Image (cartoon, rainbow, N blue to C red; front, side):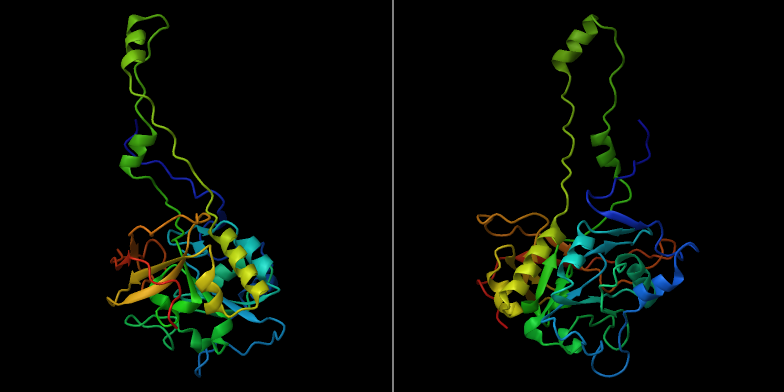
Length: 321
């Protein structure tokens, strides 16, 4: 068996959008079309981060984080999470759509080239000193200038929601592993026994004593964004305020996370699969906080420190505002 680890296939359902997000698009791409996709941007002066909405027919605003929430690109290849395209197309008539990322401007614009092909995204907020610094990187929804009662954010990092926890949904990290560990490789690729001829005594003995081959790992499709579509469409249909709707949404579990500052953050959590009504108390997990780290090409990336947060016992049924 080879000592080198084998590549791990991307999660089922996700889509490779670009081979290397740090390289410019090919000359075959329509430059005018790409410019339109990159057009959403932010205001870099004043209190508001985005321009006032011109879409008076849309009652709600949804704010999406990028990295590990709807896309993954830390190793170069850009992947979209399963059902992203379907999600955006399904909610575009009911929601003003904002992308708010801790990623640098050029990186964020490049991602928009790939995920904004239908020109559905209205605004982009990227890493900038007017809202982001290494001590405080909270995404304060009040800076958008929208009615908080009808604004919802989708994130994978609870720290980003500490100011507006009643308006946010936390999802599991979306990651695409590039290689298996040596341990995984040895489990999935057991050494082949020596070849023996049919009828040999050795073969009979081996059949009686050999260890059964390990079962293949079951790969399930990440249904996070499929379920999120259901949540958002039900929200639009209800016409309720975001805090009121989230407090009673059966697809969400109520948890408390200890943030990087040591303070508790109540959150609404959406899993990768439909939640059973009898799921009980959420298990304790350790979650890495990544939003302080800039997305950089693999050759320039330094080892990231871990900033862990721990999920504890669930709070009462409704989050305090």
